[in-house]
Length: 109
Length: 185
Image (cartoon, rainbow over all chains, first blue to last red; front, side, top):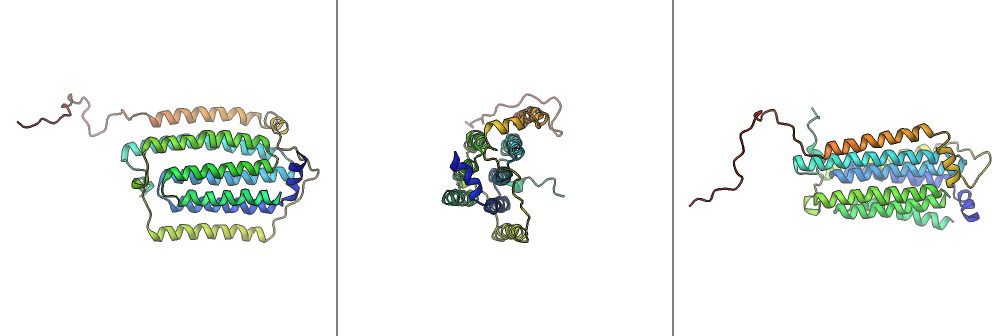
C-alpha cells in the first residue's frame, strides 16, 4: 500500500498526459481510418478511456476524488451509448445488409 | 515503479494500434480488451482501486462482451470487411499524427500544473470516492438511472423488427402468395 502511494509521486503527471494524448490520437485516427461501424464504435471507446485515464491521473495527483467520480459517470454514459449504438448497428445490418458507415449517407445532401 | 508504468503504457499503445490495424473485428475486440486491462493496471498504479475494479467489470466484462455478441450475431468476418481507399487512409493517419503533434506542442508550450496542497495517497479508495459520489454528486448519480432507462427503451425500440407499413405498400395487403416456387411439371 505504501509503495502504491509513492508511485503517484514518482511517476510525473506529464507521462500520463502524453500517454492519453497518444491513445486519443490513435482512437481519432482509427475512427477516420476504418469504415466498419463497429470498429468506429470501438475507437470511440478508446477515446473515452484515454480521457478517463487523464481524469484519474489528475485526480490522484491533486488528491481530489471528484475527478474519479467523473470517470465513473463517463463510464455510465459510455455504457448507455454503446447499448444504443449497437442497437442501431443491428438495425442497419438488418435494413441495408452491411456495416459500412458509407451506407448511412442519406442525410448528407 | 517507472518500469511498471512503461510496461503498461507499451501494452496499451500497441494494443490500441492493433485495434485499428486488425482485419478481423474479433481480433480488434480482443486487443481492445487487452488495452482496457492495461488501463486498469494504470488505475491500480494510481491507487484508484475503485476505478480499476469498476473499469474491469463494466468495460471488459459488459461492454466488450456486448461487442463480441454483436459481432458473432452479425457474422462479421474478413470477407464482409469494407476497406477505404489509400488516399483516405493516408489522410486519416496524417490527421491523427497532426492532432497528436498539436497536443504535444500545446503541452510543451508550458501548461502550469500545480501540485496538490496537501497530498493524500488514499484518494482513489472506495471510501473517499463513495463519500464524494453520494455526497456532492448524489443528484447526477440518481439521474444516471433515468439515462439508463432511456437507453434500455431506445435499444429495445431500435432493435425490434420494423412493423410499420411502408408508404408505397397498400393499406390492407392481399394475403401473400406462398413463398415456395412452383416447380414446372
